[in-house]
Amino acid sequence: MSDRAFGRLLVTGGAGFIGSELVRQVMARRDGTRITVLDKLTYAGNRANLAAVEEDPEQAARFAFVHGDIADPAAVDPLVADADAVLNVAAETHVDRSILDPEAFLRTGVIGVHILLEAVRAEAAKDRIIRFLQVSTDEVYGDIPDGHSVETDPLAPRSPYAAAKASSELLIGAYHITYGLDVVMTRGSNTYGPHQHPEKLIPLFTTNALAGEPLPMYGDGMQVRDWLHVSDHAAGIDFVLRHGASGEAYNVAGAKLLPNRDVIGLLLEAAGRDWSLVRTVPDRPGHDRRYAMDGSKLAALGWVPRVAFEDGLPATVAWYRQHPEWVASARSGDWHGYYERQYGARLAAGRPVERQAEAG
Ligand code: NAD
Ligand code: DAU
Image (tube, rainbow, N blue to C red; front, side, top):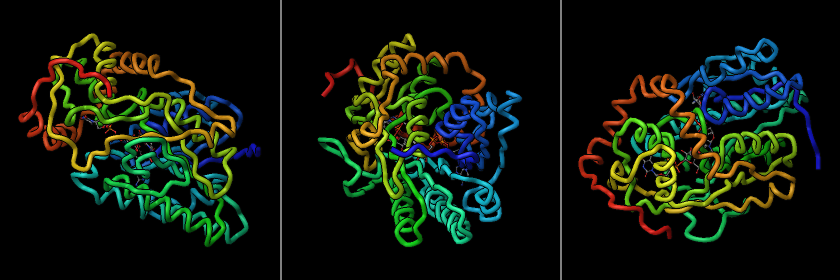
């Protein structure tokens, strides 16, 4: 098994949830790796997520932050020219927002990836081989009623978000075959942990529960997700960067398959609240009922997740309880407008949930 070292990394989307964890992890190794983050600082990006790096003199000396768009060649080209590997973590990431307004998902998820690939291709033409790692998702497999997705399964995305992610994978595969670029892809499962924007299930329900506000559960709440702690997801990405075979995709599967109702039950327990806060609300259109991936391809290389959901979830709830300023900043800007568009009518039509149903 190869173990490659990359001295200079360009991490796009490094001010977001998973990207910032990746940057913090790699920098904390103190092995001399230099990282440049390119981030557009959308509503989901937060420079404060990188404070641990920027406030540590040894790490800060190896770190640079560039505010810019991956779909802008003027920003991208010089940064790629200066990197040994590009880790594309940047994306628009929220399925509900992709249903409300898909365009940004295509601009960043398809055009942005194309701009990055072109920059890597330009360097390859000068005989400089740059590894390109794309952070993708289990959602590219679509709805999985039973069994577990393996990497050779067909892509069958069902939301605009998932379709943008699958499109980028196809483009990356084409650049590998046509131009011989050195590419790898990770398909991560549902990720949770500190610093996740409160639009997603676990941070939304945690912050609402702590504030005593209603929790909008879509439909019957029996949709199944496979939960992966953010420290595991970031470690899996770093592992694939160093050990993955060129042209290959790797499932970064979670540690726990659970229906949403079970997640909500555990979360309420950790937050010290009960089911009286939960409302069943009209479902997400095209809602995938189940995701489940087989992680054995990566396990065979020596990587498995470490954090048990039963430990990671209460620790995550505690983090949100301890960081009200971070939550307030994530809930600023257009948050209230978004919340009204997404949940106003849903919560008005919502009904209480008497008790937790049996897990299916
Ligand atoms: P996030 O929404 O927290 O962060 C995304 C980051 O990308 C933000 O910092 C944002 O400012 C930046 N960004 C967005 N558009 C950009 C652009 N055009 N140019 C530069 N920067 C831009 O996302 P996340 O949850 O950390 O997800 C990171 C990656 O992991 C995404 O590619 C996502 O598809 C993938 N993924 C996420 C999960 C999950 O459960 N969160 C699971 C599997 C895969
Ligand atoms: O599976 C990986 C994907 O996980 C990533 O690629 C995406 O970037 C990430 O956003 C996430 O997508 P999901 O749609 O699965 O995550 P979300 O947190 O939005 O929803 C998780 C489940 O909870 C899903 O079944 C929908 C449900 N849900 C979500 C929200 C926000 C609710 O019931 N109510 C809600 O308000």
